[in-house]
Structure formats: structure tokens, C-alpha cells
Length: 404
Image 1: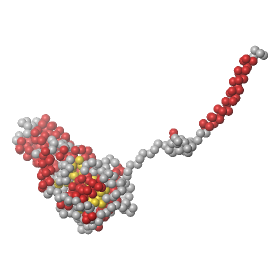
Image 2: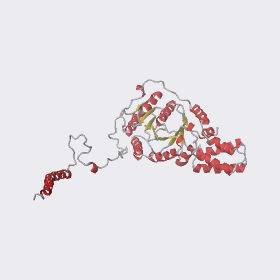
Image 3: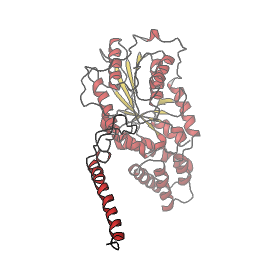
Image 4: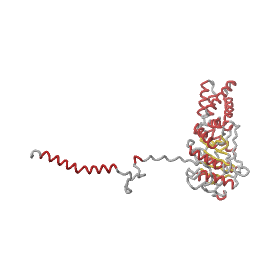
């Protein structure tokens, strides 16, 4: 018996210890299994959405794209500031633009000095001693690099090849005359480039200015208002770009410079349709000649923003016809500008193009590409930041500037 005790005692000790541990382990297991999905209110690391286990919590939904409501009811549109007339504007010297002829000369001088390869390159090629297939290939390449577009390029090259072949000339002046004639045909002087800004019997003419970010829409509105005032038009501006910081103030500053009132909202992110509506309504009440609506820049591939632009136009049409929708394009964007033009034309039916920054680009051919693709004329061109660097587009003057 004494021999067995040393063996039995350790076994009994182990059993006693296990007997004490088993209830504790069972209790702990039970707590783990039934641990609630909520944390105590005083827990400093409580996660958002308490009451749902973290692993079961759905991922946060992406922020919705800003999109205009589908309806165009004018009831409930936000109230915006409407000046009675220009009399209350801060007194500043009212500027007077150069006459049209003076602006055209200034723009032509700028274009002649610009880095354009369209005219210079073609003249160099077509004045060569021998005009063979290699030369014509280079002519095509030059035209395509100038963003003329494939179809207009082939049209111009085929016409020039035929005329050069028939006449057999190598004289630079003669070749230049042929090139000038064919380019003018492509730019098409027969297109109606008139700005429709004549007042109707009982309502003002309404103009919307649209485009992507950074092309100079607000500046274009200000410069054009300056021109219209010089032509004795009574103008009112509507600052419907409510999402760009200080856009309304920038437009109001242009208005002060030329002595016209600006309808704007003091609320950041206000409904642009509200501003446009109030501007047109004020234009009707005050019997002005032209109401110009500046809109926010928007990418052409953002459906919600394009819907919003469409809504602005529809709300305006509750009061008056929109006579002009000018699309402002940056000439340096080339073929991307053509893509922008197509989308904007589908959304708001643009009536004319304002081509800016034409002096710093070799891509003057975009004028032809846009007109050929959309059947919409380039009505105005801008060649700089100056107040007088905006003028009516003239096909012959443009081609002559390209050919220096």
C-alpha cells in the first residue's frame, strides 16, 4: 500500500485541479458564444454604426453624383439677389472697346505672330521644286497635326493636287493663292456667324454661355457684354456659375466695368436654375435688350452635371426663348474640343462656338473640324487675356492670318 501511494497522490492532485478549472472554462466559453454585437456606451473605441458587428457592417455607399432634379417646375426655386437696374452699381470708369475693325486687326496681328504650322508648313511644302507623293504625304500629315480632321484633310489635299497638276505651277505666290482659296472654302464664309442678340417685341434676347472648366467662359461673357454695351445694347448678366468660388463676383466685376447689373446668389452652391430664372425674369421686368447667363464649367462625360445644364435651359424657356447657346472651347485642346462640342450640342443645342487661346497653338484647323462635324459656326475668337482680345470670326481674315 505504501508503494502505491506515491503513484496515486499525484493523480488525485491533477484530478482536483481539473475539477476546479472545468466550470471556469465552461463559463468563459459561454460568454464568448453569447457576446453581444454592441459595445458599452462608455467604450472609448466604440465604432460608428454600433449595434452591428464590424465584419457584418455593409460598406459605405459612394457619394452620389450631383444631379439635377428631373422636373423643371419653377415653384420653390431659391430666391436670389436681383438689382433693380445699373444705377446702384459701384461707380467705376466704364470701359469702351475698340471698334470691330480695330479688334480684327489686333487679332490678326496676334495670329500672324503665333506659332502656327498650318500655313507656314503648307507653303514650304507646296513651293518645293518637285511636288511628288512624298510631298503630298507631308501635306496630309501637316494638316492632321493642325487638327483639321481626316475628312477635311483629304478634301483639301485632293483639291490641291488636282489644281497643281492642271496648272503645273511652282510659283510660291500662285501656290499660296490656290491654298488660300481652298482653305477659305473649308472654313466656309457662307455660314451664318451673326450673334442673335436683338430684343423681341416684349422680351429680351437670351444667351447662355457653356463649356468645360477653365476655358474662359466668365471672361468671355464679360468681354462680350463690353462689346454689346458699346453697340448701345441694354445688357443684364446672370451668374449661374454657383459652384466655382468667386465666379459670381468675377462676373459682377465685369458688369461694373461696363455699367450693367448682375443677378447672383450669395449662397455657395445655390441652384443655378434659380439664378438663371431670376436673371431672365429681371431682364423682362426691366425691359433690357440682352440677358447673358454664365454657367458653371462641367466635364462632358459627367451625366448628372450635363442634366443640370439641360435643366437650366428648360427653366429659362419657361419665361423666354434662348436665342444663343455659345460653347466656349480652348483651341489648344484639339480633337478633345471636338468631343466636348458633340456632347454639349446634344444636351443644349449649341448655336455657335467661341474659340479661345488660338494665338498659342498650331492647331488652327480645329475651326474646320468643328464646323464640318457639327454644322455649327465659329462665331467669336479670342487670342489673349486683354479686354479687346475677342472679336467676330471672319473666315477670310482667319485664313490670311494663317498664311501670313
